Image (cartoon, rainbow, N blue to C red; front, side, top):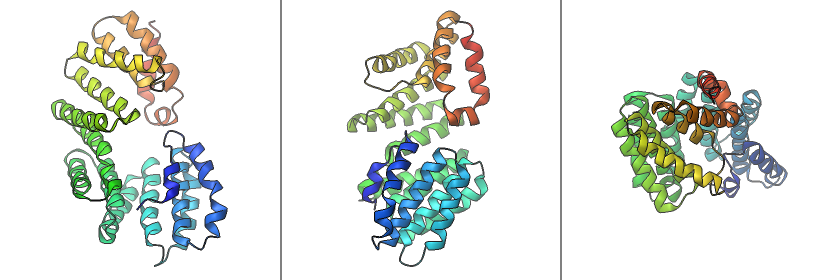
Length: 289
């Protein structure tokens, strides 16, 4: 079960979330609820990992590890997940996989569906191809069968992740079906940013399926949402519009969109660290504006 402080999470602003979490340390440290206090520390470590401060994240998790005992089992489960996430983000996948598998088994034994689904979804991320699909399917089944609403909230992410696994396997037909399912899920819940991303994923897949004009229509609508202030500025929309117009042979228009994309995406810490070739390509193509 999620704690009250988990509602403070803003995954788009890990630095701001870290600050909010750290403000809770004094009260939780003296509350007598050791398990809840250690859970808080695991989430601060997650904010650090998202900021790519891996050494700081591990140091905090070392503190959690020392404090875990029989009365802090939930903190112990969350510790496994967050230590695994830090290893995964720092490209130590074998260490991450071992921890996620342990978290999956622990969560299942504790009947904590939410964290069991989380562990299965992380196993799907560190695996690839058919093995990744197997873990995503396991996570979806647990979430769909669970009576825990926190577990069911994973379904949008799981549909999205499964779609990207099929996408990476170049099975664009199945990827499209899964992204459509993801879009429907978000539309029913009016999730805002989640729906925005789902539509973008559908459009990107359509481009790879040769349906460029249809893809442009969707991306233009997303661009309009940005311009009207309905959605946040998004360099990935401009990147896709650049790719679409490049395929149509309109290099001038493509260059304009690639320039907008580079201006935004070059500021993305994760992309700069992990997708340098992609960023360089966007930059080179933007010079044609």
